[in-house]
View 1 (cartoon, rainbow, N blue to C red):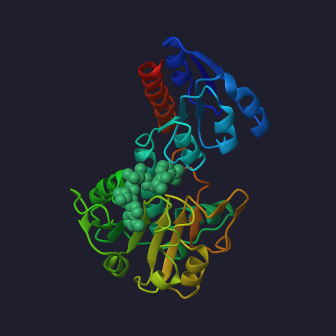
View 2: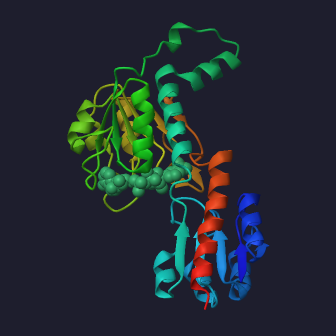
View 3: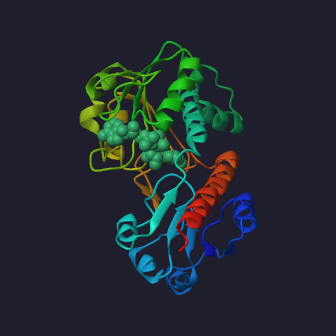
Length: 302
Ligand code: NAD
């Protein structure tokens, strides 16, 4: 069976598939029309987030049995068209949980202790101790929106920093570490709020100026889930009104091309969607997608 790898995955994943007897070809950076020309001869396609698996590509994949996405979100795969053609779509939802949770802890500490701003100041030759007085995480309340894999992993780490952890999730009532509250209570009680939800109709702009005005003065707002969940205009307004103390974002509504209204704010820190960009998460994603895809092909070969 022939597998096309269209985005770079960890070499151990490729090794696993070859060793399992599959005919594996790696063709990276194909344009959409090139992928459409290539796809008909393959039984399986593996991508990460770069390649867009559109309806046209799925229709051209006349032999396709399965599409594997090494990573979590399926935003780049037209899952509806795949389902219509009875093509299985697999992903690896667990592989980046630890990496994202660690980035979020980094955001929390950076926001409280102004590490990025102090670094920039030191590099410009300044020595301004008073300017970088900060706050401890211990004793603060962390509000987690979305009590799933990453929300729970963040809660576990925050508890070890002696934070109180509360959370809101309409579909999850109990979690070992997180006390469930409604969204308004979370907004009014939390010193730090971190979002860990998928982007859906109900989560799009779930934090806008209206909600920000219910928050504690000086609140730290973190989003390492998906862009569009927080209204960045609302955040800007919240910073201007002195309600929001700091913002830390890994994900943005406009990533390609990138744009944000927050860029000029001193207490805004950010990373370019690197939550899952660790050696360990990428390795796990490559190996895991190879395993689940190989199992699927073995079980479904006619
Ligand atoms: P998950 O499915 O385990 O958890 C998501 C939780 O959100 C679920 O418990 C769900 O019930 C809850 N939820 C859904 N709608 C909600 C709403 N309206 N209000 C509150 N909660 C709601 O997902 P996960 O693995 O924890 O991932 C969380 C998010 O992180 C996803 O958006 C994922 O795409 C993103 N993510 C980002 C990166 C990155 O690079 N920054 C990497 C991996 C995952």
